[in-house]
Every structure is written in structure tokens, then in C-alpha cells.
Length: 384
Image (cartoon, rainbow, N blue to C red; front, side):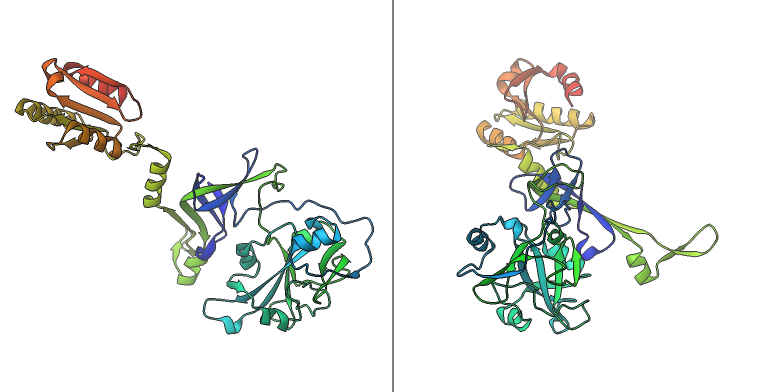
């Protein structure tokens, strides 16, 4: 289980159950020592870097054709961690309420990326979309060359001005290179709070491989499949619906709620993804739909009758048995058995029956065993 964002469900905390897999649809962040793990949407990390001993003067320099962080860092000759990146969004308090929203100026160190889920959480919820060039210019910023310097910064979401939401990383460094809000120009030596204001500082940057974990270890980003999610909802929904119970003193108290979900369909798909070979599924014993795949080989009545008798004996003994009673060829039946992937396969054939034996094979193994019918139940009792 890993820490995760609560999303639309709300509540204070949540945990996801994930399965590491290179083709997974999600990403989680874990420390190299394994003591910390979180979904990328909620992962925290320590910003490395220190403020300079001396603050350089704020200087406007010409930076022709340098609209990206990489371009301006190379042109001026500084690492990207000594630049500040501006990202722009239009924030709405809810879907369909764009008219009630406002422009958001995101600010993060140039070597980091913004995490939009963290941004929404820092804004108290709502919806984000990328801002248009017209909206950026209306705020007084210049696309490709923007910074908060010279802008009227709003102290909160209700006040006029530009709302600047800055990441913690702007305090892990200094003498930054930032946009000058003038085409073809940047500032060097920019420092907060000397040269510009912000509306709020929060964790809005995305954790990634190589970053420093909260416990001091290094982080690694890995792909995963989400198999389940549980939420600590607290009294969010019980308060809204006035759902209460009477305590030992006979007084009503709000119900403390949780939500626990396991995606059975994706869990099944995950198991198959992790347990298969070129021929089909290899079900683990604990979750296999059946324990034994029984089949008869050949068309003789004696073979069929022996298989049906064995089927009755096995089910009576408490085994879960899938019986292939078709008259198909041995090759077809074996291929289908491998494809379905039941842990144990028992084949009743004419040749073996003459010797009083059946063929037994473990799906995960290559060897086939000829087991006397008289010893079969004891054999299965040891293996299953």
C-alpha cells in the first residue's frame, strides 16, 4: 500500500494498493531503502539547494530566441536549477464554473515540473486548464518570458491582482534567472522575497527519480497497476447527511467513515499479467478458479467412464474440478488447458488406463507424471 491523493472522494488520507509493473497505467514513487512510497500525485520530496551567501543585483539581460528553460540556462551559462519556471492555468472552483474562476501563475524551480493535482489541492479544490496566451497577457505576463516581477500580486483568491502559487523550491536556491515580462529579455539575480511577491507557497512540484526522499534516501519512479484504494473519510459525508449514532452516554455522534475498494476486474488482469507464459495463464493456487483440470483422451467408453468416475471421486473429496468432456483431440485439449491455466492437469487416456495410471502435470512445470489411480488421492493430498 502506498500514500495517495484523496481526489474526488475527499477525506484526509488515502492509500492505494498497487502492483509494480513496467506496463502499468500509473506511477508511484518509492525510496531506495523501501521505507517510503506514494503515488506520484501525492509524493513528497526534499528540495535540495541553499540560498546564496550574497544576493546578486537584479539585472535585465537580452536573451534572444530563448523561450525554454533549457535554452535560457544554456545561453546564460547556469544550471536549470538556477532558473525559475512560470506555468499558467485558469482555475475554476468547480466544473462548469469558469466564469467564477481566475488566472493562476504557477512558479517552480526550472529543474522541476509542476504537479497539477498538488496545485488543485493547494487551491482548495476545483479544476485547472492551461491558460491561453490572451489570458496570460491580460495578467501582465509575457508568454515565454514571464515572472512575477513587476506584477501586482493578489494576497488571496478573493482579491484583485495576479494569484502567484509558488513551489517550496523557490527558497532552495537564489540569484535565479527569470523572465522579464519583455520579449527577448530575462532577469538574472532574482531573489524572493526581495524582488517579487507571491500569493501562497506550497508543495506543487512533482517528485521523480533522484530526488531526496523525506527520510533522506533517494527516490525512484516506477510504473504500477492500481488494484485497490481505501479512504479515511472521517465525518465528511456523515456531517453532510447528519448520519449519527448514540454513544454510551446516549448522545448523538457523527459516524466516522471509511471507503474500501478493490477492483476485481483489474486485479484479475494484473494476476494474469504477472502469471503467464507463451501458452497461457498460470493461475496461482490461492486465486485459481479451479484446482484441477480433468480431461479424457480418446473416444473409448471405458476411458470416458473412468474419467467420469474420477470426476465424481474428486468432487466428493472436496476438490474444485473443471472437467473437459469434449471429444476433441489430445493436442486441442492440452493447448486449451495451458491457455486456461488451472494449476493441476489430470489426463485419463486409454494407454495409461490399461496400466492403472493417469497423467498428472503441474501447469507451472514441464514434467508430466504417471500416477497410479490407487495413489492419486494421496498424491493430490500432499500437493494441493
